[in-house]
Length: 196
Image 1 (spheres, rainbow, N blue to C red):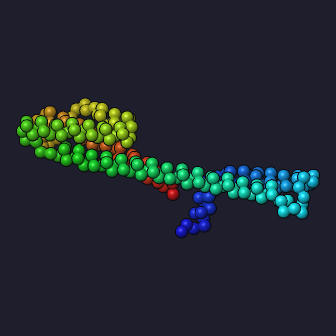
Image 2 (image 1 turned 90 degrees about the horizontal axis):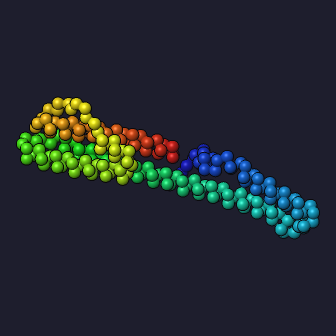
Image 3 (image 1 turned 30 degrees about the vertical axis):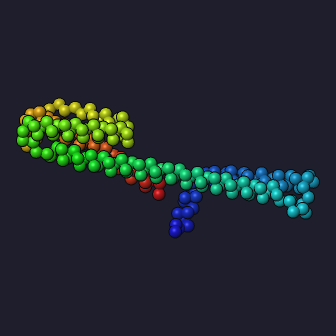
């Protein structure tokens, strides 16, 4: 169970500055109507309905506060759902990162293996691009897809120059995936911290 301080902080966040203005205004209008109706004889002060406008004002103020609390709860729930969606997408991206690392590290000793390796690499690239566009947008997909390699590094274990160049591109693409995972993990952690 939450502490009293946590409850009051949540209430203050949910209702905001309106917690002072509108309920007080509703109560003041109810009290004024009550006074006006009794003062000018429109309502008998001894009748059971003498304080009806004031009671209606209190009920209206309570309904407003409840409405704001429900609105806050709905917003918090949708924010948490968004965070969970980001985390699920990051889990999928982490799986693609592992698969890409396996492709990068795969041993290639002949031209036939190079062709199989390149087919697997292109299928991986396409799957990553689709995942990025679906979950993170066109910007992230383009950052992954449009990697520019000015001068490939010499990577030990490459079969030939073409294999070395494609491994260097794969390494850069893996770095882009890593950057995306870190950036969105930080964003999800920040949102989660802001939401609690």
